[in-house]
Length: 391
Length: 189
Image (cartoon, rainbow over the protein chains, first blue to last red):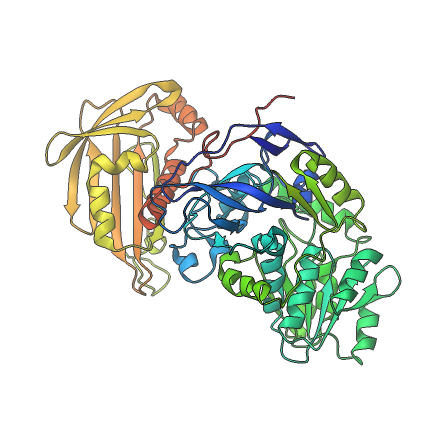
């Protein structure tokens, strides 16, 4: 089959690779009809995440048609249309039983789980196409993919619903939704969202659906700010205003009730030596880079909540722990528990309560995926979301 | 084991609270590892006690043949592609609670191990503790080789227990082995 594969920094190409096979009883093979490039894929493209191997298939936002199921899978059958969560989770461990699939204890293979156990104290769940630290699973920017535990993760999609309306259930839609939920929004609250990329836009849509009285979006790309505005947010261009002062003025000195960091930070790596490198890097760069996590803590009102869907990987310097404690803040974060949200979020799509397609700027055949990566990184204003069609 | 000189009044039976927090085995390389498994204690014991199941989660155990009620012959994948034979004898068998074994004289590898199964007191499943100790096939050199091949006891105990947990909780062992489980491009360029 054809697949988008990683060969080093800024070097991705479409190669012919072996077809995936059913290996475990609960596996399924999916023929991929739509897949997307995620902002977090750019961390891999930039070679900021360790644990990549030459030839790895990327992609963790994908959907398609079931073409083969393992003998232990009784819930899927050939021909089913499904969206696949980017988090690989078993459904049966301590965490999955408590509706925390992004903390699944079993999906990261035993030989791959050592690295994050050392870096984080505990191994993390498996993810599709996101380095060998998260399991070394092949991704979905390909014609086909093997989906483990396919009786637990994938959600079936009724016929007659366009791929593009449901594709983002795989990641960014539930990620934006959980970010808003983590912001603990009460009716009438003011929510500030840093970053108007796909996750930020879904956080804005979700915050409004969850009852926010007012959403203020922060970015520097005019086109992305325009999308935020079209979704009901007031916007701030951080190249034009001092963000914290603007937020104070807009809220009459109170500050936003909740702040969402949908930017994250380039990963600083996972292994102990990389963490040391990250400390050095942070010290050198800390004075002249905007630091969103810091800014959210300084801007949020006393007793407010900071929600962090943005990806962090290593260690951060200049963490304003005093403001965090003295203002009595709550901080909530984590990889998205995708499986937890799928039924309710699909229903919102079916009911026409949310537009999941307005952020798509480009649709490309899989063969042009390298062009998609290059432009998504270099032309962020125009290239807001790339959907790939492998078939 | 004794509980003397503990600095806490917690009594959760964890080895972390024992005087000897590092278990000493009879042999050079030893490791202890614990995991919480979301299945009933008896079921876990039963699966482990059937030693012919061991290759399903012990990657370096290629085959187990049962000789009699207490003895079994294990074929172990050693460094550099060499196989070793091991005749194991069960030294302690408390149904639903504990299995201990040791290699008998004349085995290629000197080895002992035990596994404990205990109900979590707060209803969170079964606490499983595994201890593995062995003399590496060819002394220090063997240990280095075994470590390189990721069969060093600490790595081995950690991974075997993870696989056992996966198998018991989900019915399968998670894998991303290329090419079948996770295709990737050949490493040209």
